[in-house]
Length: 327
Image (cartoon, rainbow, N blue to C red; front, side, top):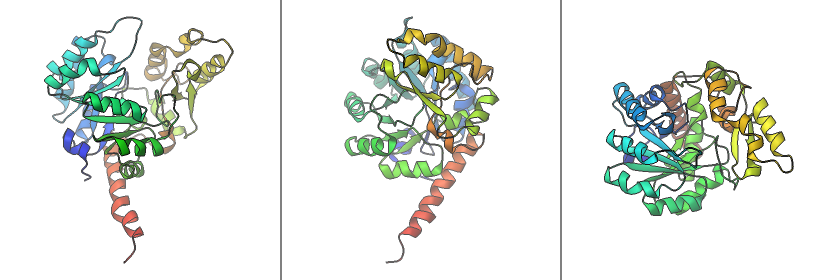
């Protein structure tokens, strides 16, 4: 067992987190993560309404009695999202951990604090992490350039970003981006983090609510099987390399192109339907990180967590310990 500030403060057994993933972070996966002794985040906006979120929270509670959290990603949208109502559903549902992402969480902090909810805020830069710490969040999840999703515009890999964050933050740090095994966990701890966050690794599990083709593709892919897109629109994203992401990159590189030129290809609904649900791996955009190169098989969530912990403890107790020699 590895005890860190994060495991102690958030009441979990192992310093491993399954961060929020739209359309993937549903009850069955998050309960399985919790039952494996890690911390999983149900994605609030995967649920169509706050009432649906309340029902999904109840479903998780029927499947586990261990801690879990809710991801609340705050982004500008064409149709207004009732964020306050989703927030209230979280608090009223008795969930005590929230992962915020996207926009500044400040408007929601008083309500979360009054409800006894601990807040983990996702950041892609040290300056953003420091601002969130001043707002009173309880931990920071810092995303290196290797991550799936939106790594920001600075292109700082985890080896530097995690250590830089640890030098300046006083609250627990969750290292995110490029993690999939025990060696990564040990490296993150050595850099000053208190836990690791994994997304792609948890997609390639038995319990993940995606088509088997997606899981098999992650296993087949290597560390080169991602594509950086949307850079021209100052909204850089790392996604899986496929026909759609290649086409988006080609169109975006043309002089005068706008997001409207690729919106039909990048639509989230299309990716969820064609790829995640139907298993058409070139049918839409889907998200995956460079950690694909470290994933060799589809396992249960329990097997993932147990194998990572066993590898990490063996590295610390044997390999690293043996390097010290005899004085």
